[in-house]
Length: 90
Image (cartoon, one colour):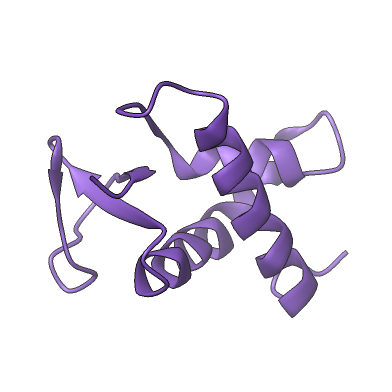
């Protein structure tokens, strides 16, 4: 299965929003939460979905749905270095 196709990207976007809907309004998720939810297996193949999940989060940022945070504060794509969290826009 290719994890870099458009359908996988759309699935990741939907899963990110669904995961956030199930949490408190101020809660955040890790891209790995979405990657694990989309991965079709019980091995560590979800790791191949990490970059596609980060790209899906950036698309949702552009759509005004979520924000990417580091250290609890929103960051732009240009500022991102290392692990990120995803939360609903405040």
